[in-house]
Image (cartoon, rainbow, N blue to C red; front, top):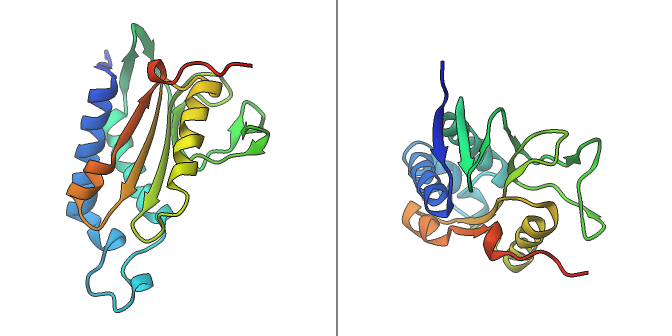
Length: 175
């Protein structure tokens, strides 16, 4: 059976993210913001638990599909959470080990499609560092896209926070 082909560009990626975020908030909002929690730390679960559900919905969106990006087709890609390998070595950026929150790639190959970092409404420190990490990964690791999402108290604020960095807007690093 022929796989459905998705032409993946910045707009399509944002559309997919928006659909997933709406599902997250419709079905799992109390993971992100539970208004019944008495204190700030009791109004949410860990970022990892939320990213796991984002991963679930992303897999449902992209499973058994071919991604077409800039005229190249990508089949049999992997979607991973907290993946810290590059071929057989620890994934590094600027000499430091890194663990992207979520990536789309081919394991043990240099096929890198998406590098995604999340931040949460209760822990916004490091947003600038994450943006730098994402754009540097796009430039130095040849990802087609980088993205950041701030998980806020409601879906509309979260959708507004989506930032996508396509490869063509992140020129190669100069040595």
